[in-house]
Amino acid sequence: MPEHGGNLRDAARLYGHANWLDLSAGLNPHWYPAPDLPGNAWHRLPERDDELVAAACRYYGAPRMLAVAGTQAAIQALPRLRAPSRIAVSAPSYAEHAHHWSRHGHNACLVPYAALGEAVDSSDVVVVCNPNNPTGATVSRDALLRWAGSLAARGGWLVVDEAFADMDNAHSVADEADRPGLVVLRSVGKFFGLAGLRLGFVAAQADLLAALDEELGPWQVSGPAQLVGKAALLDDTWHRQTRRALDAAGSRLDALLAAHGIVSSGTSLFRWWAEPAPEAFHEHMARRGIWVRLFSTGPRGIRLGLPPDEAAWLRLAGALEEWTKETR
Image 1 (cartoon, rainbow, N blue to C red):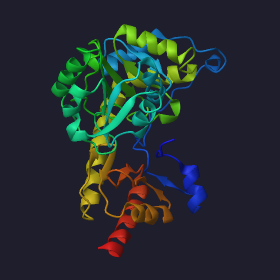
Image 2 (tube, one colour):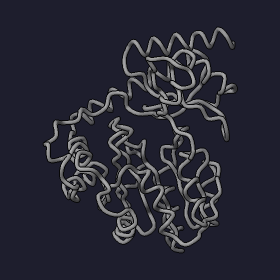
Image 3 (cartoon, rainbow, N blue to C red):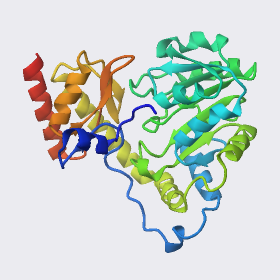
Image 4 (tube, rainbow, N blue to C red):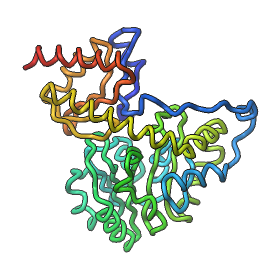
């Protein structure tokens, strides 16, 4: 399997430490406060909750959606819904996309993010993260809709992973997912900080969602996840306050890195840069109990998430200061 952030057991096994600062996953460190749940939420088989889907359509602006056990479930299933096809996956991006398209008889190739538009005419499916994970790069909404039209004209798909789009939705195409061949993935894990909930949504035309639903099978989303997810999606006050707080924290992280000569890109939830010595930086931080995301292949670099509190900010600042003294 591709490597991911959040693997603190691996960190503890390799480096020890009892008090890890996990900045590896790019999640909101101040997660949505889950409401108390009725006892039968744990007892009953989870029925499909139309109110949850309605809340998701309202929040994401989509005409219809399917709730799934995290967008990872859809990423694994979508390649099984097509005959062998020519697949272009943006690179770098979330590694699970290329991994699963390459496992089901498809001809999957990695295409530099900036060259994706050139790959549309020679592909049956184009997969793009927007904003991109890990770099934060974006493709404009207009360009995405043009690509979707070109692909759909010959039975193709444009799969847009919008896991990190919650901050402003400027380039989101979820509201246009009624178009043929457009598939949009949205995650509750990142902005809401609820990765452990395993809840995501897919927006697409009705027939494609029905095929995906059939492929995934019954009881995809647990009862507790449905209840917590619905509360989170409907809490407009929390959304507004959280966006302001994350914008401020992202700017602070950007400024902290810049003070150490690191020019980064990304979103309000994470920063990424092409570090010339990524393994050494990763090792330096790990020795201090700070877990960051290492990218050792493709564009080599580091991704950092947001510290959760002032003590963590100071701890990160101290580790960066030591790194600067050792390497500059």
